[in-house]
Structures are given as structure tokens and as C-alpha cells.
Length: 487
Ligand code: TRP
Ligand code: ZN
Image (tube, rainbow, N blue to C red; front, side):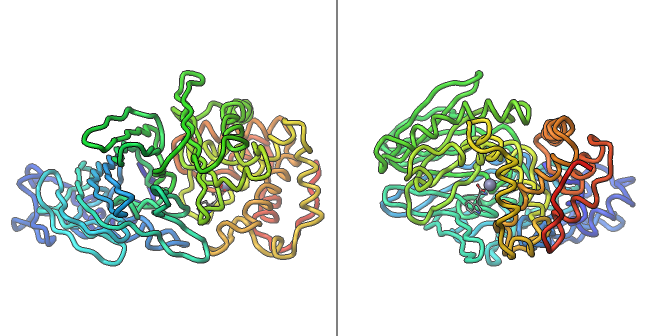
């Protein structure tokens, strides 16, 4: 699934196909070109070109790839923690968005053993963290194709000091694959940008006795010859950075809530306590958020708590956030649960089309923490706003959350000023329009990608007034905006 704008990345092939069409060329098979892009017969009108090596995100030009749109990944990996070795076969179902002579998948490290496209062996090569696939014959715009990649090796994390991006980490007794804005390419070949959301099936095989947790609905497990395969299915479109793999020894709690499976896993490295109690609060927090944002968007609930010194954050991995144990060191903490669950609506169901719009995720999720605290008997959202409005640093007011720059993607401004922007909007349009806006936004953009401009346009429509000045000052200004009031 994808944005229409990514068709732009498909290059000249698409233009030609669009203007000349297939008229007179006979069936697709007869018109098939050779893999180098030359057409097979004189007079054939299609021109096959390689897909771009990135989707064209200004902040991260190499993320994702052009020329196709993935609908489903089937990721089958076996990981042996003792040898730190991963063996995988990933099947990618996609549709070409242009006439392709070749296309890329993102894959960091690992050794590719074989690639097939529609069952036929395909040429493959590596260019850094790109896997370049050249199918035996060109792929025609609009047609579906299935790529199967067999690979293996010692998975490595990605290194980006500014963002602390993660990827695959080998832990004491297993592994954790996690990270934003990228991580998936460290354990499977992927179109690694949130603009191409897809469904996922995971089959993770680990030594018997270990747990392997991923996204979505638990789809069974089976053990043979000392290895256990854990299956997970995420049917709702998911951005690749929201995929996760957590292997180790865990305390598992399974249940059901509102007809959906609940699956929590807390590392046995922690004694039973605050982490377990906080995670158990997931369904109650989700029900509260549902009352504010509308229906919970996914088919499962859950949370995973890990204790690895390299992971000091939480991530809203789809339907099953991963939390650092550090959040629960001082006792129960449902604030972080509210934040990660709010992302299920804002970030996961309604996803970014480009990383610059990150405040839409983090501002709304941070605002959800304020709403939850007020609901839970803590301070009001207004008080939370006031404290920050009065006390925030010059750095926060100088960094525009709507244009933070790639290295400030997760800066305080994006989270706190992002949430202040949401509150300023609420105060300006009034509670009725504000809460209607949140529900309408979640419903209209469910399972889709959306932009700041679309959010602003919907806010103006629901409120029935111009809001340019408000958003200009709060999202793009470089000094503290005026205190918002009903005007
Ligand atoms: N998006 C995460 C949150 O707000 C935080 C985060 C930012 C993160 N960068 C990360 C988590 C990298 C893991 C890895 O909940
Ligand atoms: Zn967040």
C-alpha cells in the first residue's frame, strides 16, 4: 500500500507506459523485454527502467525504494542466539508502479543466498544497504509480482548516533530488533519507509524454551527437533519501522479483550512487579483512549518489557509496544503506556508520509499522556501546558516541531511543543470541535498515510475557521508563540 506521490519515483518508464499504452503490443508476455531494459521486439512501446533507490524523503533520501508498492511480507527467520546467526526467507508481494527492469529492497548486512521473482531465479547484487534485484524479465506497471529472498548471517544494528537508531541487537539470551526511523532492514529485506505500509506474517524459529514475540495476532507455535516456531500475523497495514522481533525468556500473560487477543511478555530478568502491573493496564488505557480517539484500530493488544542496557526507550511497535524496564524502575507507570498506545491511532493506523511530519505522531501521543493523567486524577492538560509554556528552554522555542530537521526528529520540541501545539489548537477551537477533529482524523485516515497540511485542513473544516496563524506560529515559528486563547 502506498501514496500516489510515490508513482513520481517510478521514472520515465511510467510516463511512457501512460502515454503510449499497450495498444498493438499484444499480451504482456509477448511484449516482454529483456532484463537490461531493451525491448524484445522492434516497435514495442514499453521502456523498462530501474526503480529508484529511495522514496524521496527529504530527511532520509535513501529510505525505501521507488517503482513498486508492497502489499504483504512473509518473514520466516531462524535465530540461534548461541551462534548469533540468523537464517531467513522473506517473501514480498508487491505491485509494480512503473515498468521495472530492476528494483531495490533495503537490507543491511547479511548475505543473500538466492532471489527469485515470480518463481524464476533473479540476478542480485549489493550496493551498501541496498539489495538490487534484476528479474529475468521486466515487470510491467500495475502487475503484481512475488519476490523471495533467502539470506543468512550475523545481524548487526544500524549506526546513526544522532538518532540512536536501533535494528538488531543480540542480547544475553536472545535478541531485540527495534528502532525508529529504521530497523527492519537489519533482519529482513524491506521497502523501509512508512509510506509503503503492508500486511505481515512472521514465523520466528528459536531454540526450544525461548519466546519469540512479534506484532499482531498470535497465530500458533510448534516445536520440532529442539526448535520452536512462533507465528504472528499483522493484518492491518503496518509501517516497516513498527515491526519488531523480541527473543528471550519472558513471563507471558495471554487473554482476550473486546474479542481481541491480548499478549504481554515481561522479561524474566525483572522480578514480577511494577512492569507487569503497568503492562496489565494496557486494556484499560486503550479503552480510555478509544473514548477520545474512536475505535482501537488493530486486532490485538499487548506489550513487551525488555531489560537491555542499550534500550532506554519505548517504541510503539504495532499492536504490541516494546518498553524499556527503566520506565518501571520507580513503580507503576501508565503514562508511558498511554503514550505508546496513543501511537496505535496516531503514527501506526494514521501514518506519516514523510519523516518531517513526526510531530503528528509525537505531539498527539504526548498530548494523550496529558489527557490520561487528567483522567487518572493527576494534573490537568491545561496545567501540563502551563508548566511547559512558562518553563521551556530557548532551544525548544528555536526548534520548529513542524520542521525539526532530520537530526532533531526526536527532540523535546517535537514531543513537548508538539503537544503544546495540540493544546493551543484545543483552546482555540473549543472542546467540541477539538475532540470531533481527533475522532474524524483517526477515522478518515485509518490504515493510511497523512500529512500536516491535511491535518490543518481538516482542523479548519471542523472548526469552521482559518487556523494558519496558529499553526504557523506553533509548528514553524522560532520563538515562543503568544499564549493561546479563545479568540
Ligand atoms: N517513538 C518513540 C516514542 O515516542 C521514541 C523513539 C524515538 C524511539 N526514537 C527511537 C524508540 C528509536 C526506539 C528507537 O515512543
Ligand atoms: Zn512517541
